[in-house]
Amino acid sequence: MGKRALWGAVYAGVLISIFGFTSFGPIALALVVLLLLNELATIQTMESRFPLLVLAFIFLSLGTSIGYGGPRELLASSILLSIFLSFTLLRAKQPAVEIRRSLFTISYVWIPVVYTVQSAAKLPLITLFIFVMIWSSDSMAYIFGHFYGKRPLAPTLSPKKTIEGMVGGIIGTLFVGVIANQYWGLMPMHIAASLALSVSITAPLGDLVASAIKREAGVKNSGVFLPGHGGALDRLDSFITAAPIALIIYQYLS
Image 1 (tube, rainbow, N blue to C red):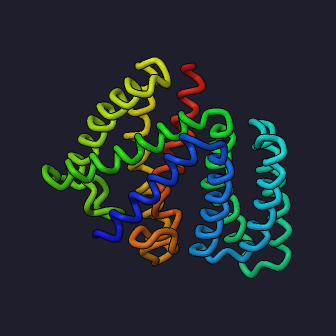
Image 2: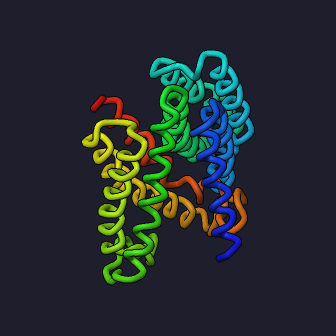
């Protein structure tokens, strides 16, 4: 537990430093994209893992020269990635299975996280705010679930998650979001509350999606990213779903 807490603090400190005081946030998230793609392709035993990573690296490298672009670039890269990966089906042992795995990987990791990369290039402090909300959601849900949890939220996927924990996570995240925005002054308060609410609902769902993927693959952890925390997917499962939705809400309300 001590090692997990220590590395969790290091992880949080690095992210706060990068997004709060440097312009390297999008680059850090671009590397995260590659880590997530690699882990997801590995636990799904994708035959097209190498082409997927090479093409993703090329697109992300090109993105650094154009600031990662916008919706048009995201759509174009997703289409090209899908088309290029289809060539691996010529020699795939299970073409239909490989199609499903490739398209799922693109829709689950590539599209939402690259959209977050694009947004982080323009909104680094908003991205950091979303990270803080995700940490708050996880922490508050754990605390409330530990002391008051009785009714399982999703007993098959995650027996320890409770309805009481999720409700506590929502309340706690709203409280932290309002206080943090009051201190930072990033946005109007109703937008901050909206982001906190969206994160507190979607973050646990992201965790459950990753649990379903790992359960089907028969693995406990997706890889080794931080000691005591498992792989990048284990650490960022909530971020994959919560961050893009929160950013969409922010850009819409702004």
